[in-house]
Image 1 (tube, rainbow, N blue to C red):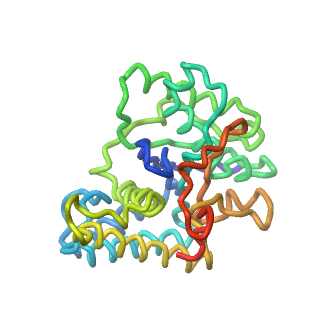
Image 2 (tube, rainbow, N blue to C red):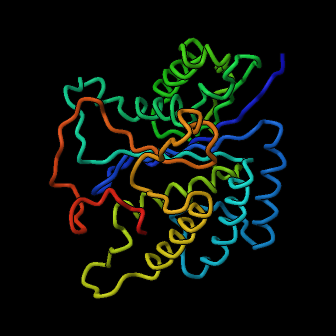
Length: 291
């Protein structure tokens, strides 16, 4: 029986956008590959004289070309299969029905849990149950109280007993669930840039102009250019990729595990549709395949 160890880096942007909200991202890799991947990304940063933490919020025209080169290195690792990336988000028009106050208060953690449980198709990583699979979760610092974070760790540890994980012989051990500082992890910095770019474009922030101005700001223009480059890199993997919907599974559920890059638009099973938050482009625009 072989033993496999994976590391799952996680980031989030739970703030509410005008159209899309609750953005969560994950980057999965083999544990034995982490050092080499971090070294590749760190060396690229050093080559570009980027010594501070890279973040979507820091993108400017002056640093645009350097961010593009770093993103290219990150996507080279995705294309080669050394990193798998998943982006999850919600659409504001789908309003969950009958949520209790407790569910509303804990929505941040409940959605985070769903992303970690389902987005990577982990239940399909060991279809014959031959291997033992161990999962380390490294979460970017969570903006909640220590008590809530500890309760969340308990929930994540319980994944091991869920049928989906149990059948795949996946173990999640509590001391392998930690919150980390993205300043020390270039993989998380790459994930932050991709996650931020999707929040930016899906919420039409590329159209924003400073109050009282006729033209867009330089930072907005730089971010749009970086988003377009990221989208171009995704499309080298999946032509005509649609960022606004869940990525398809033409080969069945195994694609949720096998694909190097996927999106998941999380929609509550029981929901009401609020059409006032739908963007228009000759009709509803969940179709971003034209971008």
